[in-house]
Image 1 (tube, protein in one colour):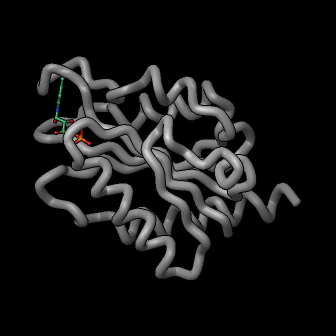
Image 2: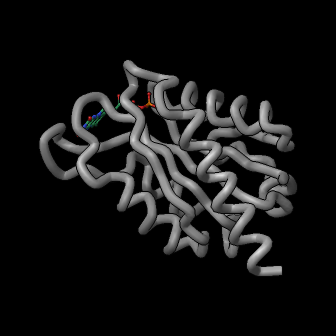
Length: 146
Ligand SMILES: Cc1cc2nc3c(=O)[nH]c(=O)nc-3n(C[C@H](O)[C@H](O)[C@H](O)COP(=O)(O)O)c2cc1C
C-alpha cells in the first residue's frame, strides 16, 4: 500500500512518533511518505491508500484533553474516503483525546480505522503493534470496498 504519515508537532515528540510509525510501515514493505501538516506532498497524499494522522495532547493535564493543532488537522485536504489511523503523544494524561482525533478524521471525511495514545517518554512503546493493526484494518476495508 501507499501510506502517508502526516503530523502536527510543536516540540518534536509527535514528529519522532511519526518517523517511528513511518519506519514500521516501511519495514513491512509499504511505500511511505512522512510530513508535517502544511508541508505535505499533496500528490502523494491524494494517491495514498491509507493515512496515519498524528498530533499532540492539548489540555490542562487532568481535563479538557483535545488534539493539538486541531485547526490545521481540520484543514487537511486529501483524506476524504481513505482509511485513516490516528496517534497522539501526551505527557501524563491523554484522557479521551484519541476519540477526539477520530471525530476530526470523520469530519474531514476519513474512514477511521483506530488510534493510539503514545506517552512521550516511552516511545517507541506500542508503535509496532498499532501500525500492524491499523494496516491490517485498512487493507480489510480496501478489499471490502473493491
Ligand atoms: C499547551 C499544552 C497543553 C498540554 N496539555 C497536556 C495534557 O492535558 N495532558 C498531557 O498529558 N500532556 C499535555 N501536554 C504535553 C504534550 O501533549 C506532549 O508534550 C506532546 O508530546 C507534545 O508533542 P510535540 O512535541 O509533538 O509538540 C500539553 C502541552 C502543551 C504545549
